[in-house]
Image 1 (cartoon, rainbow, N blue to C red):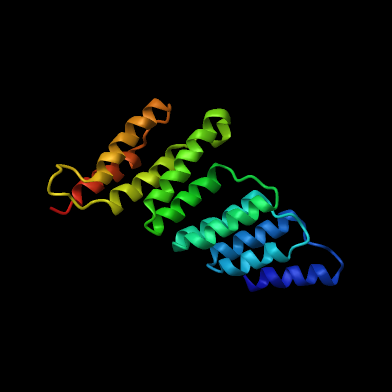
Image 2: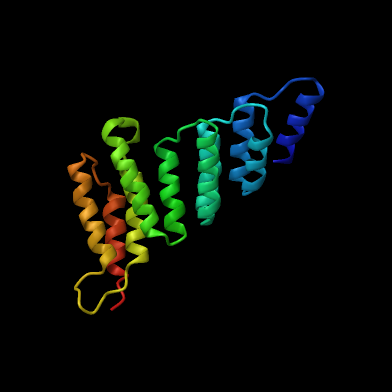
Length: 188
């Protein structure tokens, strides 16, 4: 990582300004090395308009850490910059909500994405998007209410599985395994 920033400094000494590709590459390098804050500062201080993939990389890094607030701040900054996220961006937002135990917020993001996907195919949730949400349902709502035979999260995951089929999204083996793992880990 240090070497990459040394190259950036050498470029500047030779009056070579980094472009969108070099900035996005550095951002991705920072995120992959766990320095998400440095990546974020890099796009904030860049003379170039950061790309959706650069913002999404940072957003995903915060999501993986469970820092929902930072992930949504990055999303808001991206929108203020006049950029519209993509399916990967929205899936990362769902993941940020899931990792911070905010199922209701994740549901709202998924519902907004489904609505947006009705008019723009590029935003149609895919199996990865649904798997992300189903994972949260099965992990965060696995306690059984004594009055019910299945927990709320598993029931919703099964409904979502049917919804996927109605939306022409084929569940994967991973989808089924997530639900099976949820069933196996039930706390009676």
